[in-house]
Length: 259
Image (cartoon, rainbow, N blue to C red; front, side, top):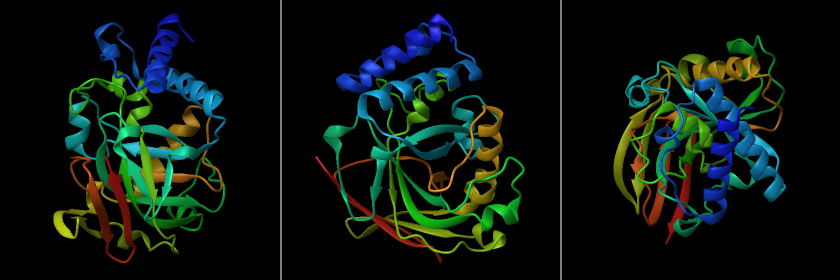
């Protein structure tokens, strides 16, 4: 790891611990994508050492052309989910524990078996359960969304905050995953709609991309881990209130956000 990688991961870790946001690291360092992932790895190691928590899965970000354009890239990016970042359905989240969080309705997969590097569609469908989910992206930067570079985002664990996971069910077939409608409610009022085609055309494609990308980095997807597959809508600012994401054939998930 380069000196620049270490300096960036240390700065992000200190921001994480102190709850004080920092300026974008791209103002000082010009990190390539591979360098940014190395920085993310070191940041995760530091957080794991501090909190004694295992890796519980991965999130996929920028799964639409519109979100990729923000970071001037043509593929998604992944972040690492640790066990303390998983929230079960109906539980509360306090804004005081976060920096500048967003909200993204996402389908979440839970692996029932390890995924091999060459996992095809059928292997994936046979190796997961599916759940309604809400991702709460969060970053350690000042005024971070949508002003980040790719290096900023990946270095800071691709803005991984929390995932809220609903009831797990047997997965749908491949074609059905491409046609899931979403309704998002805040305090019982519908505020947004979305569709699974926004996630690389089909959330299963997000799992395929992640599996290949992780193997290219010497990592793999393990039984019991979660995959937050990508947002159905443009991100929203997370505010105080009760949010429910309701997905066709998958179910609903709720999180209560307090100040």
